[in-house]
Amino acid sequence: MTTHDTSSATDQQQPLRRRTRTAGSPHSGSPTRRSPRPEGRLPIIEQLRQQAARGDPATSGTSSATSGEDDSEWQTDARSGGEEADNEHETPKVQLLATQPMGQKWRNWWVRFVWTMVMVAAFLMILLAGHAWVILLVVVLQLAVFKEVIQIAHVPSKERKLPWFRLINWYFLTATNYYLYGESLLQHFAHLIPRVLLPFATHHRFISFMLYCVGIVGFVLNLKKGFYKFQFAQFAWTHMTLLLVVVQSHAIINNIFEGMIWFFLPASLVITNDVFAYVCGFFWGKTPLIKLSPKKTWEGFVGGAICTLIFGFVVSSFLIQIPYFICPVKDHLGVSFWSSPTCTPHPVFLPKTYTLPASLPIFAGAHIRLAPMQLHTLVFSLFASSIAPFGGFFASGVKRAFKIKDFGDTIPGHGGVTDRFDCQFIMGTFSFMYVTTFVGRLGAADVLQRILVLSANEQVRVFRQLAEMLVERGELHEDALEKCLEGLDVYGSAPLAGLK
Image 1 (cartoon, rainbow, N blue to C red):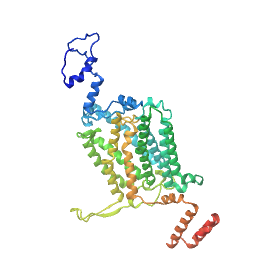
Image 2: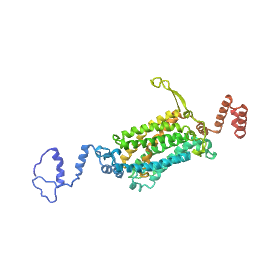
Image 3: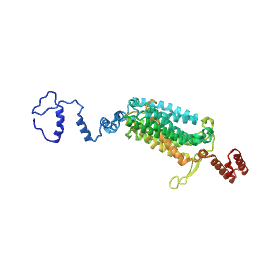
């Protein structure tokens, strides 16, 4: 046998040479010649050596073989493997709107424009129909977004072997909505709850928690060998969706209860920013903004922000004059734009005179008359144009991770419902936090909700102490207080006498 070079590289390749001898070749003293290898295919040892040199982890097939679980489909599914697509050399080039051919450019423009007008018209009709219809709209959109987001992580071949899998996802959604919407109803309509439903209202949080525990038990009982990793990945995905979609939509509904302006204004600011960012990018966009969303440009980002600031300041000055938008919902949901609701305006909607600081050389000492709401709107506009778009960028990152273009095709020219409303959730949550922190005040419904969970004797004690305060302030006659307490003694229990 011929002596070969003793270098490490040759030693490592020697087994491969013996394996690749052609059939029937004689053992001779001459070096063995390797048979040609089909192009694009490497022996497994060379593949592993190249992966080790690049620092790549083991392939899904290898890890699946060692783990004992059939999770390779979840790991290697074309939608879920997206890390390699994040590399620049594998990212497809995206043509900016301003540089697209005119025919394609205007064709996309008209499709998007027509469906934008349809959505705006439908939105305004529902908005004027009343608070109940707007809440129903938010719930429907929430369900549509939840379905789209959950759908992109589904693997049908796995789920066919897990008959209760999707049902558990929707059960968690139902339990979460029961808790969140129950909290909203108790906060705003506790004084209208029928007596037969009081036990459910009093123990609402405990009931909600037990419903969630039932979901956990059902999930654990549905675990199946060979699918553990897939099932827990889906469990985490479902809860992430509940947090980012359902919890934030609950904040939007609370904004509706506080007054339609707290829902309509933030939503319209996001829509305005999206429309004008698209228009400015369409005509002047040249500088890419972020790699996650290659069609977004700095020109569109800045142009949309300027238009949003102007729109918010002007529109808010009109909305604060319309009772339908500024009156909170406290007694019933049967209010519409045409029912002409009335209320005492919150101070934030009443104009005030402001004196400009002396540090301004030109306008020092000048007076301007504005409603505080107009100043708050500037904050909302800044958030809608600078932070809310990152909700869309977050959604773009999810789409890149799963290698999909859109979350769906429900809306022509726009994609799915999630593609259109991805920025609205973070904007609605910001509005809720901002209003409760800087604008909101504790109302009668909020106090009644807390009184509702007290015992009968504690409720009477609260009533007596409140009545005594009103008597001291001269807003309630003492004789009226005594008559009320006598009536409580007649219809109440014996311990009420001890409260006098």
